[in-house]
Image (cartoon, rainbow, N blue to C red):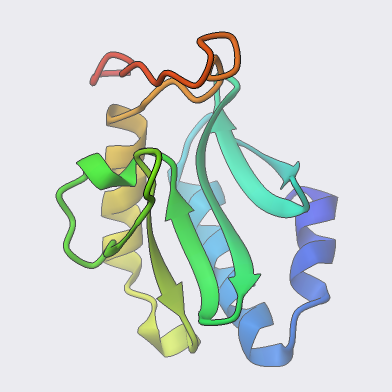
Length: 133
């Protein structure tokens, strides 16, 4: 695990720390080729420089966010972004985490991607990357 991500996780309250460690383990184990690092002060994993998945501490809990998650057709990812194609779920206890769901979402995250890497170059216009990576 990236040392900065480990440090981020360690700074969380005990219950949130468990959630963060569990998410980092699942993402590291199930997003082959993913590069995890802190980005805008939160753990984020990238594929070929494109942000795929990350998590952060927010008032409602630990938010697990998939940058292209709105296209996953997953009812549990019910916190949808207003401007982009992101979708999220909040966790308040490690027992709420369903590893099979997370693994399925990570698989979809590899297959379904919008090109966030070139968002600035395209002046805020998102383009879909090929659905089979």
